[in-house]
Amino acid sequence: MTTSTTRRPLLRIRNLSVDYGFGDDAVHAVDGVDLDIGRGEVVGLAGESGSGKSTLAYAVTRLLREPGVIVGGEATYFEWPEGTDGGDETSGAQPVPVEVDLLSSDRSVIHRVRWSQIAVVFQSALHSLNPVLRVGTLIDDVLQAHEPSMGPKRRRARAAELLDLVGISADRLRSYPHELSGGMRQRVMIALALALRPRLLVMDEPTTALDVVIQREILTELMDLRSRLGFSVLFITHDLSLLIEIADTIAVMYAGRLVEKAPARALFHAPRHPYTYGLTHSFPSLHGPHRTMAGIEGSPPDLRRVPSGCPFHPRCAWALDICATQRPPDLELGGSPAARRVQCWLHEGEHHAPAELAAPTPAPLAASTNGGASTRTAGATVHSGGAS
Image (cartoon, rainbow, N blue to C red):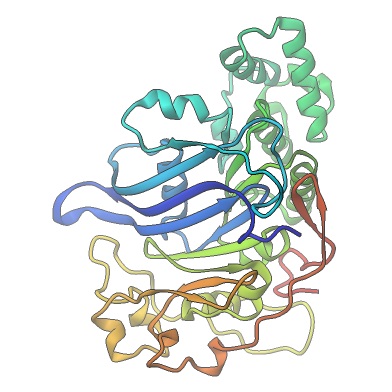
C-alpha cells in the first residue's frame, strides 16, 4: 500500500480562508486550512453542518457563489504527464508535474482543469441534473463541450459505456431525471463526473438522501471504480462511520478550521482532538455491551464571532486556560507512515493529554495495490459505529 506520505501530490491547499460577506458581520466559513491529497488517495472531510466542508471544496473548484469570497491562501493542482499513474516518490526516475494555480485570477486556468481533471459530484442529484434534458443529452453535452473532435456516434457509445460503468443499462439514456430513482440519479451524476476521466473526484455528501442499502451499493461501486481507474477522491460527509470504511485519510473540520488529520483507522480508534473524540463517541456500536451515549454539549459557534483561542474550548471538557486566549499550534504527531496532525494545546509539549486522547494508534489494515489505488481487505461496516 502506498501511504499518504509517499504518494505523489495531486492537490495542495495552504492557509485557505473563505468569508461570506464583508466587514464585521462577515461569516468566516474557512479559516487558514491546509490540506493535501495524494494520487490515488481517498481523503474524507468530516464535521458538523456549517463547519466549512462544502465551502472549502467549492472554493478550490471555483464554484463558490456570492457572497462567498476567497480572502487568502493557495490551492495548487499537480497535473502529471500521461502514463505516470501509480507509483510513489521513491520509485525510479521522477516525472515533473505542471503546477496549476486554481485560485488564479485568470478564469481560463480553472476552466481548463475543471471537469477534465477535477470533477464534482454534488449533494442533490435531483437538483443538479437538468430536469428537461434526457440522460443521454446531459452526457453528450459534456463530451461535446470538452472533446469537440468526438463525433455523435462515438459520444453515444461513450455515454452508454459510462452508464454501464455505474451499473445502469444503456436504454436509460432516453430517460429524464425524474424517471429515475434516487440511487440511479446519483449514479448518473457519478457517470457525468467520470466522463472525461478526471484525476480528482470531489464528492459533496453524495449519499446523504439515500437509504443505507443504496448507499452501500453506490459506495461499493465507487471504490471499485477508484481501484480500476486510479483517481483520487475528496469525500465530504458528516458520517465518520462511513469514512472509516472508504477513506485512506480523514480530516476533521470545526468552525472553519481543520482540527485533526490522520489515517482513517487511527483517527477513528485513537482520536487526538476532543472534538473528534466527541464525534466518534456519539453514535452506538452494533457490537459489544450496551453503553450510555453522550453527545457533544453545546452548539457550534457563530462564525461571525468565533471564540478566541481554540474555537472548541467552550464545549471542551479538557479545556486549559490557554485554550481560551491563544490559537493552538498545528502539531505533527508520530512519524511516517502514520503521521498525523492536530490543533490542540493538550498535545503541546508542556501539557499532558488525557488518557481518552492518548490511546495507542492501531496498526494499519492489510491492503493490496491495484493501479496505484489501494484497496482495503478489511474494514468497518457502514453505520456500524465501529470497525470489524
